[in-house]
Image 1 (cartoon, rainbow, N blue to C red):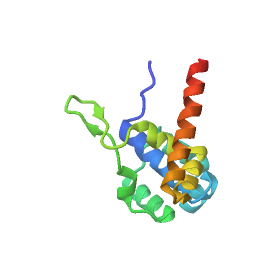
Image 2: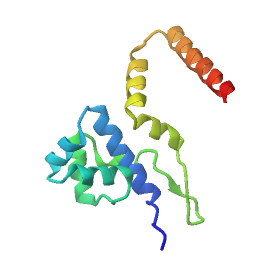
Image 3: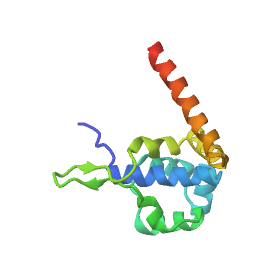
Length: 136
């Protein structure tokens, strides 16, 4: 018997919960405490293993200070063939922003106001990535 993989929408919603939680520096334990559930349940929600019901999603939105619609922004949409296609940002962008490094890098980058400096930062990161690629 094979284990069923999480629905793409459930995974997306969970990753948005994680991203927002990390944006406001809240632990899984603290979120679980505020919702009256365990941090393990929060982990399952964030991975998309357990679906988040409508009323629970509303509670999570209230605790994290965002409307329910926030969790669906950029969600994959059915492609007509029973599967899902991406709408908006590629999944790797949401995955990156759901990591502590991705969030820290994005927050710091957004504080740089000089467009020339921002361009040089992008150039630097691209050069480092090219070197890493060449090593493989």
